[in-house]
Length: 208
Image 1 (cartoon, rainbow, N blue to C red):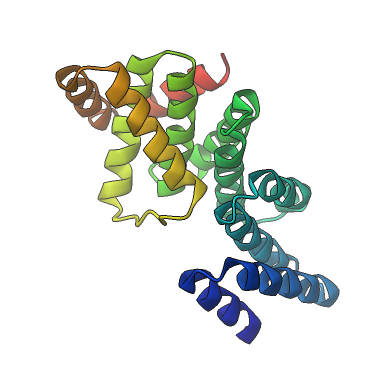
Image 2: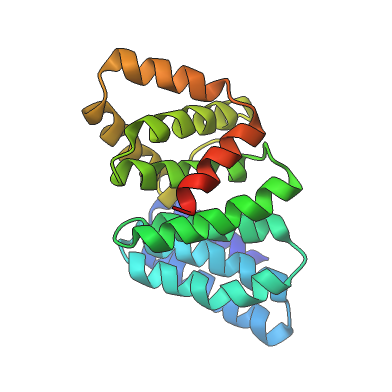
């Protein structure tokens, strides 16, 4: 517990190298003790620290390594969280991989709690894929919905996370592609979507 707290403190202070070393040490200790759930959470934290260090591919590999055990476990919200983060890492240079990870997160999360913030973040990852593929109208609709859910849950975006980076890149793409009035109209229309409709629209893109 103390090692995890110290790792988190160093992370928030910006000492990412120390935080990374401590999360890796914690993960190894949890593995040796058979604390599978703790090990999985540490992997999630370690990957985010590595992403913040600019080591995006390493962050993705950490989550890929953890993914089979998390899939087999009982904590499905952790699985959704992991997949959403993985989608964010892959979105840098692997749109198909990002779409697949986000689709899996959305499929699982929508069956558990359709309006959970992690489900909205999965939709946001798919919105980014839409924008990169040139479907800016769909992207704006999905982002309008996702942003409304995130705000409604008072979900705080971590400035160093991959999901926040995706949000920023997506917002930039939409502002460059759409005139302000059209972006505002589509965003408002997206915000008014029922969760089932937003999920269906996102899955249709992710499966395309």
